Image (cartoon, rainbow, N blue to C red; front, side, top):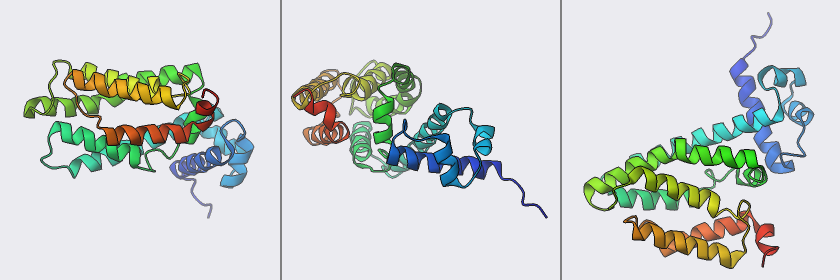
Length: 221
């Protein structure tokens, strides 16, 4: 009796193998043939589900985003009676410390050089990612730990500045310039009632960005 074809299992195999190869070889140097051979399937099986390598990396990114979202929900469920401010600070600390959250950062480092990817990333920050931050800010307003009349706008601007403006690939800078940008972001958030970036967290963010983009930083020093 012929073995029943499992479409979902094939897709999951393609995505997990692709993520591994993108990290090991780089996105540009990984071919559909590489993915097929490593996964033990035909190129035709890949093209049955994905029209191009770009579609695969988009699906890999979406899978990673869903995994991170589930992780964040799990962290929040453990915070109990914390204030909105405490939740945001803890969430930021965990996010910048977690290896799982930053699993694909090396791949994204090359992808974010694409203008199309940057625009898409910015749209996701505003249209998707900011929703959760907005809700926590509203909790902070209700419990008095945060003071702002613009919770949604604060969430959107914070994510855009943190994820785009402070990314050395998008806006090139050396170590000193990056540190100043982060200090300004800390000052700006505090001045609008959102004191969520303490010095320890700032140092953690700076170290992560410098580790991810050492070449960009060195060439500008």
